[in-house]
Image 1 (spheres, rainbow, N blue to C red):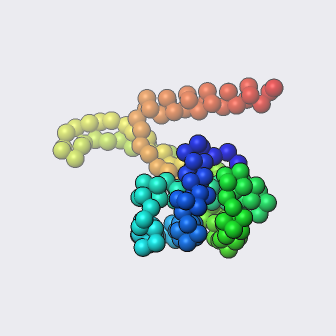
Image 2 (cartoon, rainbow, N blue to C red):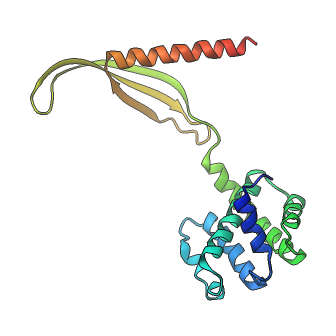
Image 3 (cartoon, rainbow, N blue to C red):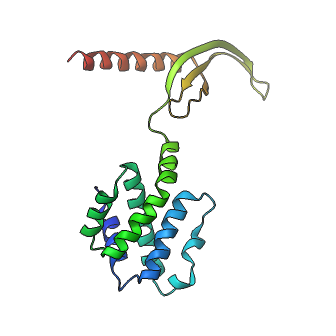
Length: 195
């Protein structure tokens, strides 16, 4: 599992019994899961009286590291052996590894639902409709006599099975520029697939 150096340092500090006793570790671990899974959670999860003796900067750093690792493990659907191996590399003792794995297993389903709701792919265009509009006056009653195109893109979001519309207005030059760029993209795609 590839994590940034900052996350690794925060995680190693969390493993240190001198920085976090067993009770503080448990509270911080549960706070990390709660802040990820509970939309109503706020920074008050770190205001527990048993965490007051820890420097707030260190506390937040370790909380962020734990939350990052939890998300990364959920994203990769890590099993207990994968979790244990990484935690051992970060110098966690057996008791903390067991506690972490138990907490992870208890929240794994909720975590996968959360990560699944974020989405994996961009929406794709299923249809395009347009109409020509002729603007005669502005809202300040100045005469304009300017044509404009109203374009509506029907898109499909495969992750959420929704079909929103994207609408925009453009003048002739902007529409020609858009069409030119789409043709360039299409030619590039054709060239890439010929190899």
